[in-house]
Length: 171
Image (cartoon, rainbow, N blue to C red; front, side):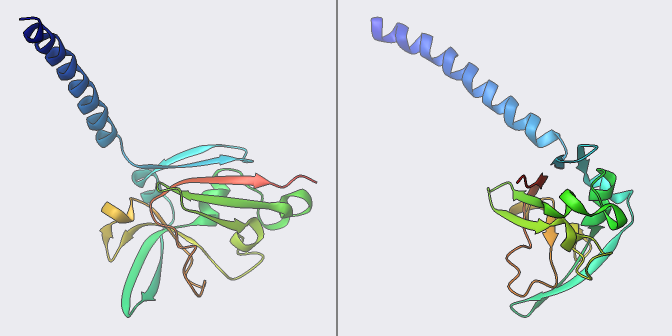
């Protein structure tokens, strides 16, 4: 009889826990995927695909293992400009010792110096992509991806992008 009571008590507790976990998962699925731009910026940002769709669009074509992909999105320097990151004439002094740490949902990270992201310094544009071959990025690729088309190995073309942090080195 006592064993029966324990089951009766355990079941509602287990059911409550199941409901709480399910609600958390549903809430996470309902919120749109976003990218945070934080750190040494004048204006921290959280951008969704809808926000990126309103910005000037660009595209790049890549080939990996014989497979060609056309990515579309926004140049990373445009996003950084919205966050108030120094570019062009204002990218000098301490700002030249700054970098962007890009992080994916899986913990993968890549680093870009601010100068290499500024078209006034170098002809090497990095794309913050939200579509591939005219379809929204999704699944194992994540909703956003950094595409570094001129990097030979492609290791900094970071999938599942969730955060860009601007870091200023101190000396």
